[in-house]
Length: 355
Ligand SMILES: Nc1ncnc2c1ncn2[C@@H]1O[C@H](COP(=O)(O)OP(=O)(O)OP(=O)(O)O)[C@@H](O)[C@H]1O
Ligand SMILES: [Mg+2]
Image (tube, rainbow, N blue to C red; front, side):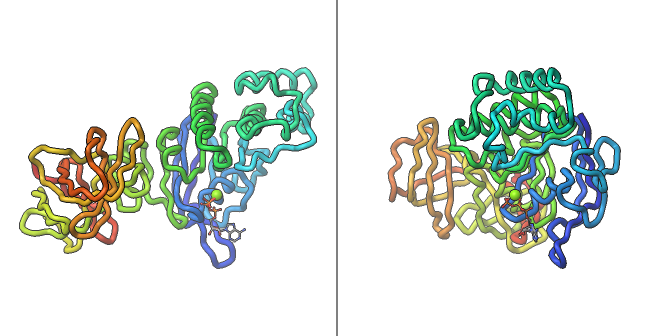
């Protein structure tokens, strides 16, 4: 196990800066997830930790040791890629043991480590097969097995589940969480799936355009996003954003209601953020009138996709409301204590609804 520290790390390709003076601490034994839109630099950052990508500026420190100039093999890491990168002509057993054979371990030691990895991943019956004879999920397990046998200090995963179908992705996600509980190694995991980030991480790093937008626990980012980008990125379906402006100790939503607030906003154009689950039907709070466009019934719950009077799209969780059909006018109450306030330029405002 090992901690990982990134200090003022930058990466440029020619004049293109893809990682910009980034600082991050990853605790020993923790599970850290990098999330962010395509092209924001997640893979580049992971590859810089791995030693697969030279660092333009700053330091990468693993277990207290500066590793900028160390080869991948000397860093005590193992990386699992999206495309598995298995050797097609080797059996599962040979694939998993490959790095140990390269390291010239003796045969009984290799056999013992391969067997232990196969047991952890429950792939013992597959050891004699070749990759072409495996399902996608089984191949991914083999790729993880190849990482496990090396007893790395740090596991690096780059979108390991994105080639799998939805159901398999969920079950492999649980497997990776169990693996972390068992091995207790430091894990760094890249994804652009916010559900994977929420369910796996101790610490989520939200990135945009080569910079960190916010670092926090899943609950911390969900409850207390610092800006519109993070608020919109974490949570599914995403948070609703409604245009508003301050007026006399309250906030007037273009969509209708006025919210009493404590604190004075220093801006004219504001955005009120409210998650789909933070509405109530009935009740005496501020009400919004919306036209129901689509009702998405998920069985366990349902989401109402509607449009406000101001023409803004709104998603409302309507778990118990079985009677609504598209075209209906519906009145929904805001749980004002859950509303978040932002400058329209993005920064969170230190305001809350007055109770
Ligand atoms: N070898 C390279 N030369 C020039 N630019 C590169 C190179 N590799 C990556 N980039 C650029 O660096 C940026 C970050 O790429 P990176 O692969 O880290 O993104 P990512 O966040 O992993 O995206 P995705 O979610 O699509 O995998 C992108 O704009 C990409 O075009
Ligand atoms: Mg990537």
